[in-house]
Length: 119
View 1 (cartoon, one colour):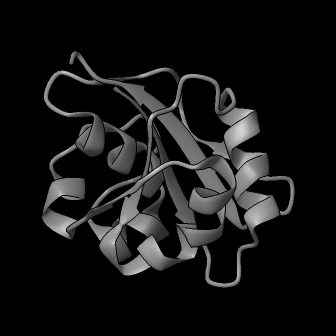
View 2: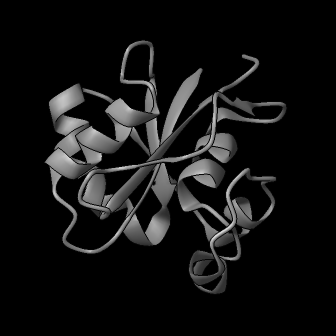
């Protein structure tokens, strides 16, 4: 399983999400999209465009993940340094690893990270 995790501000466009994904390594091989439950509806456009399901994650699942990036603002809101990284790891399952740190869209409204699961 290969999961693209996302963090984004309200009002982030599908184009910004696509840009963040491209900067993180692209959609090739990705099987699922993931984000915090409170943000899941914001991935509807990207999900439809790519034909991929969205995994919606509760805050506890995000907080349990060891991420590469640490944002104080994001940590205060979501108990993790990176929603994108934590969502990708949590959705990819136990033992998953990140391909790299989160990437930021050119307009700064979206981040994406890709994780590979063991299954």
